[in-house]
Length: 261
Length: 73
Image 1: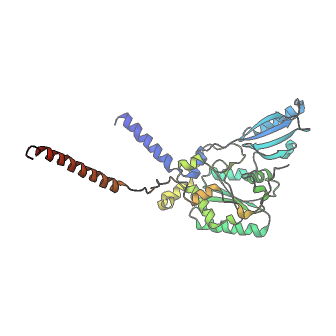
Image 2: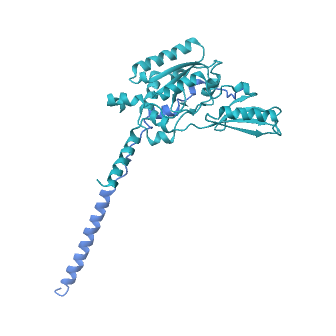
Image 3: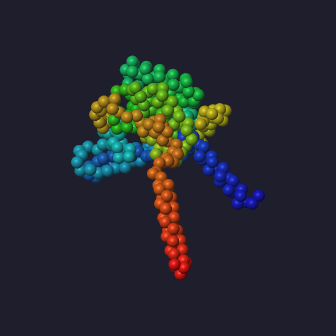
């Protein structure tokens, strides 16, 4: 066989593989997380103490999807820090103690392990601490996952919005859309890829139909329409996304091809 | 820690996420080309062209026969 024919066959094979990759796997392998910006606002020249403090902060957060910079403003009295994502202010901190453990937390570590293990997604159930509301949504979620053939490759984590240990994670989730902080309803976030949180289902929106649609979205063959307009917000986390396990979804679809259509 | 806050009116008016609506309506897959019905004038054009052709042929043949038999008349 002439080398040129061999190359054409290889290229065609790669193109066909690209078109059959599922959304969840494509996002994990290809979608680089967008960066946050942590800005130190100060007035006038930077003092030696502040310079050392900022140097230390810069070193601590450099492994995450975040950049650090300082901005001088004349209209402020005391230095403060602002956490931004695409021009949106997520949080304001008056001193570095308030954003300790900003880039990682125990739950975020657990979620990353699940994503790297080839799970379809992690669903984070953000509770209101109102038992009646929380139990209703959780029951619906468990029912929907039990009925889905993909339920076993989805991990669910519960998180209270009033937690102190995961306060930064809860805040990041509540900033996925700009009105979430004002809504006292349980929320269900699909977390996929390299910690991308989809816009959540909330309150009555946590229905079996919508959860099934979320799963259908993640198991669909990745189309250009999805690639060009990826939903969700990247969550702040340390960058450790090399060599993920093969997607568990592929085995389920290989064993039962009708589920992949 | 202070967060920016935006007041929220009512949960009932809040739409579902766009990715979910697109999935529900099947917009995340390549859409088939929409076939739009157009007015078909081909029959009228065919009648007009045929009529013009017949009239033209009649006129040409009339002139031809008149000229051919002019001397006999």
